[in-house]
Length: 153
Image (cartoon, rainbow, N blue to C red; front, side, top):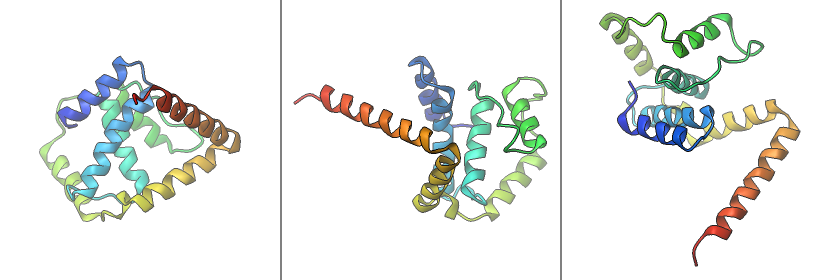
């Protein structure tokens, strides 16, 4: 279950008209913090991100299911189930809940290091292609410039 603060931040993002991926970013951030503080671990950075995205879908963020070419059918099925309200019976069984938690606690916390996150970001950026990266950099520069102009003296 996501923390109240995370839900509030995501709702704020939604009210401001930000994209679903930005809203979901709050849940991913929470998950990274959980791994860092030792609440549980993650096998790798992608797993920590996936857990965050799953939480976001369950909380009502309108995230699309992952791309068919990049994920397995079972992952897409789980994402679809997370985003629709069907198949919900409330809480999962205590036995299943404990098993999942114990499995995650056995994993390490190196998935949430700044080095691992940086590597993951670079990897996913390179997969998106050069033009996309150039456009992202231009947009970042414009945003930075507008922030500089609006900053009070």
